[in-house]
Image 1: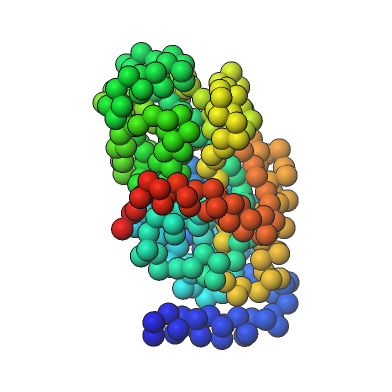
Image 2 (image 1 turned 90 degrees about the vertical axis):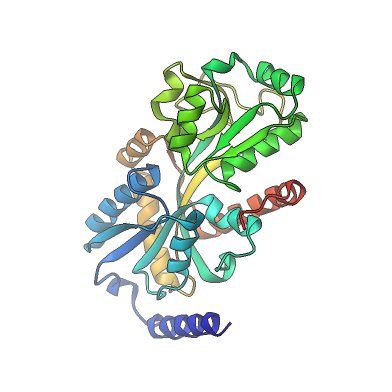
Amino acid sequence: MFHRCRYLFAGLAAALALAAMPAHAYPDRPIRIIIPYAPGGGADGLSRLLAQRLEKTLGQPVLVESRSGGNTVIAAQAVARAAPDGYTLLMTGGSTMSLIPLTSKQVPYDVRADFAPISMLSKGPYLLCVSAELGANTLDEMLAMARAKPGALSYASNAIGGSAHLGMELLAQRADVRLNHVPYKGFAPAIADVVSGRTPLAMLDQAALGGFGKSGRIKVLAATSLQRSSMYPDVPTLAELGFPGYELETWFALYAPARTPSAIIDKLGDEIRAWLATPEARQALNALGQEAAPSTASAVRARIESEQQSYGPLISAAKISTD
């Protein structure tokens, strides 16, 4: 409690000192974007594209720093405790804010009190995939196998309590089937076992799936967004296949510590939205398996609240915990 109060008072003091700073004075030194993932993935690529743009328009170096581990909590905590001056930012997936606080009582940050959303950057559907070894060519065939042997069919996810885990649980609940969850440490090992047939099912991030979905070694049965994927336009959505309203997307947003001056939040948000409106940005994001999704800060908060309302009952009913 003492440490928590110390961070709050330190942040308040810094915010008061910055309140009178004119927007044109920012930035006057390098900016850090912290990501809670290992280098080389889609989030890393997205952050580096953003960093290049901000360096060009803001005239200061923008450094991307990876602090993976702790199910994204380590990086989020570091930014929550940083000075609210716009020089330490967090770029992370939606589950860091929407889902992890629901699956763990140990989260050392408060989503609403400790962060100031700036803008969404990108989004993309998950894809319901099966190993070619399974022999299921459609969603109906896969569900028939699951009903024939309840609990025998296993699915992979990249982490307990993440979007891929909860999305599959939601489908199982709505389809009234019982599946066996096998969590992995990231999408790469999960995909390897789906390819081999060891764990034949998964909801996979479109970016992480990469070329496997078109190789024939993994079959893509459905997209989890309300609209079809631009990368897989021939693949129907789960909503089309009898699960109306089913929607699950991976999405990334940029955050600053709470009490960061609104002039800085607005300046960064305007820069992001201007960048994402360019054809070059949209093409670069598509190459990463993502779609540009600029937003206001209030829209980020609304999305977090909506996902927590949607998945809170599922998490409680399934007793999903990362503690």
